[in-house]
Image 1 (tube, rainbow, N blue to C red):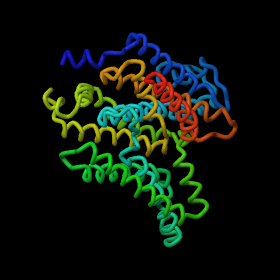
Image 2 (tube, rainbow, N blue to C red; image 1 turned 180 degrees about the horizontal axis):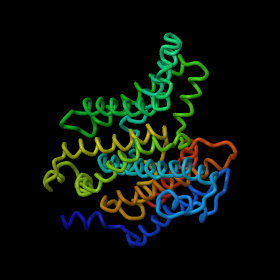
Image 3 (tube, rainbow, N blue to C red; image 1 turned 45 degrees about the horizontal axis):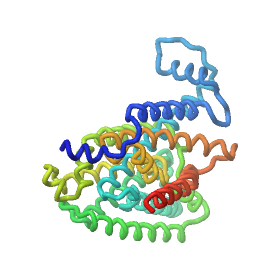
Image 4 (tube, helix red, strand yellow; image 1 turned 60 degrees about the vertical axis):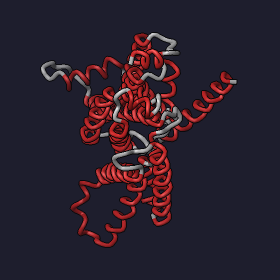
Length: 363
C-alpha cells in the first residue's frame, strides 16, 4: 500500500496544507459575498448581526426587519444550498472519474441528470393534464405544488440509477457495460423530455425551461431542510472510499489483489454518487460542468490521490457554485441569469483551454 500511496502522490506540486487553507479562505469569501451581494447590498457587519440574532438567542441585537428578512429568509438558505450542491456535484464528479479511471467522466454520464429531467417534464405535463380533467377536485393539492418538481426529480434520479445498475450487471457491475447503459438511458430520457416538450403548453414549457437551466432561486428553508442533510450524509461517506478509488485507478485485478471487493466498491460508488447528484438536481435543477471541471482542477494541483482529491473537490465546488450564483444574480440585475447557463458558459471554454494546454505539453 505504501507503494500505491507513493505512486499517487507523484506530481503534487503544492503543499496540501496551503491548498486547503486557500480553499477554506475561498469558501469564506464566497459565503460573505453570498450573504452581502445582491439587489440590496448588505455590509458584512449587518449580515453578522442578523446571523447572531438567530443563532445566539441569548444575545439581544437590534436588527432592521428588512435586512433580517433578506438575509435570513432568502440569502442564508440560498447560500447554504449553493454550498451543499456545489460540494456534492464536484464530489460526485471525482467519484465517477475515479471509478471510470477517466478524468473526463461527468456525473451525468450514467443518465442520472437526464433521468431526473425526464421525470420532471412528465410531472409538469401530467399535473397540468390532471388539473384540466379534474378541475377543482385537485385544489387540495395546491399547498404541496412547490414540492412536486423536486420530488419528481429525486424519484427520476433513483429510477434511472436502478435501471442503469440493473443493465450494467446488477451485483457484478462492469464499467464498460455501465457506461453503455448510461448512454442508452440518456438517449431514452432525452426522448421522453422531447415528447413532453412537444405536448406541453406555454406555461408548462416555461416551467420546464427554468428547471432545466438550473438555479438556486427556489432555495427556501424547507428545501434546505429536505436536501442538505441528505447531501451532508453522502459527503460524509465519501472519505471511506478514498483508498478504494486509489486502488481502482490501478485496474480491477490490481485492486482485487490489494483486498478491494471491486463489484461491491462500484455499487457503493454509484449509490453515493447517485444520492449526491439526485438530491442536488432535485434541489437546484440541472447545473453542468461543476462535476467535470472542479475535480480536474484539483487533480492538476494536488495529484490523483483521493484522500486529498475528494475533500478539496468538495470545498472548491462549494465555493465556485456560490460565487457563480452571486454573479448570476448581479450580472444582469435586476433580472437573474440561470446559474446552469453561467456555469456552462464559463466552464466550457475554460475546460477546453485546459485540454489544449495539456495537449501542447504532451506534444
